[in-house]
Image (cartoon, rainbow, N blue to C red; front, top):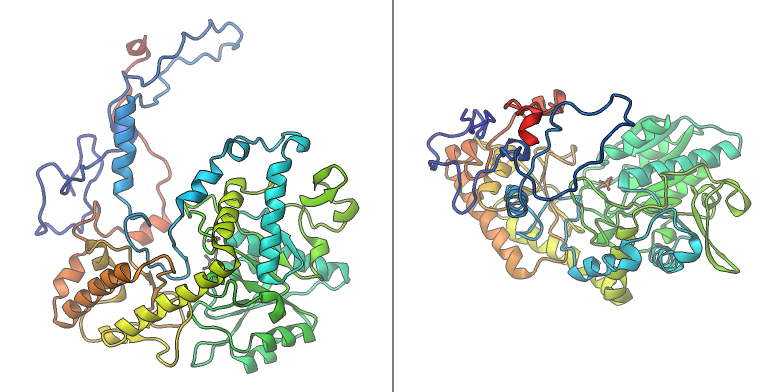
Length: 522
Ligand SMILES: *Cc1c(COP(=O)(O)O)cnc(C)c1O
């Protein structure tokens, strides 16, 4: 392991010493960068602040040690963050093929709209008479979400897909409780995204798995056998995480309703059907929509996202506050569980949700129009099928028969005997300038590699990606195992111990250098 000047490891232990190294740790035009606290900026400051007034009233709590904030100048600060940003992949650099994530281009028009001062400078506690424009935008967004899904109600406030799942299941629990019948379990297919069973468990339900058929869909016979009067809901993703449309979705809804259960549809893959299929027509009772997937708002560093939940007539009364209602004086936010919101189950967050994401999503919808949104789905599916068609002779598609929806799923059968694993292959993609596809998910497919290109990739960009994957596939089959085992050699860090990082995260940073005494700053 090598260390930088303040003792921070700059290369993992598995770093391949045979890979080309530089004297400084820089790579090409990319300089190595320490943490901001390690940049030795203690004696500097980027801003001039007036002297603090004498602090007589702090009851002896005045600071007697340096606060320890780095004090970089403006150009140093800029460079620090730009260098850090270069250590990571971004949708603005290249295709981001993560399946089940819908990583698409974020149109700059959306950013421009979100920065309009009338939206960007709002305070959530401002009097509602001064926020009528923002409330009108929320109302228009709600209208589009309801129209596109064919559902009568929407709760805008959940802050991510998983938060939307929680919102939907809390509404379902409230509806069962209102009927005086608490139920115990939620049915989830084996291919489900991990958030589905996690949400059900969090709400207090037992999770029962539904089997999958050989062609990657919900096994109806198994579903029927497990649909007892104790089942509160089924959670089904459509199109599912194998990238396939659930052909029997109407029958699935009918079966669920026949035992008094609700149908929660995970709408994370709505990108594949927006403008073409209305989930309300399929019998769905609740479905979250990831604005940061389908409607192109950024997925940045874990947030902010937005996961509005559309609700059926049966669940609408239990939607969380705030409710946006039309009143004589314009729009009004009903914050308390009373009046029209008397049956609201509670609230999902302190204020009203992610305003900036609402503006971006609405700008996206308006700039595409109804016909443009339909084309989004068509092009997303076309692009995924192009990838499937162009890679199926070198890799093994998990479900070779028929077209896929928005993502192409491969298994690792084609790597058998090469000594290269799905993980090795994904790591080698980093060296070729691509973020890896989703690996080992869904769990029902061995060594899964799930590729979702989205509609925002041109044929040229798709061909560039396909070219890289084909070259790597040929290298794997030609026995160039070393390349794969050493990869990535071009990234700032090579393979990390991800298990250790997950099991024993080091959440506290301690300075490797002693802070200078307070007098130094006088
Ligand atoms: C992304 C995703 C989720 C979770 O959404 P977040 O916004 O990341 O919380 C749930 N289900 C599926 C199928 C997804 O792809």
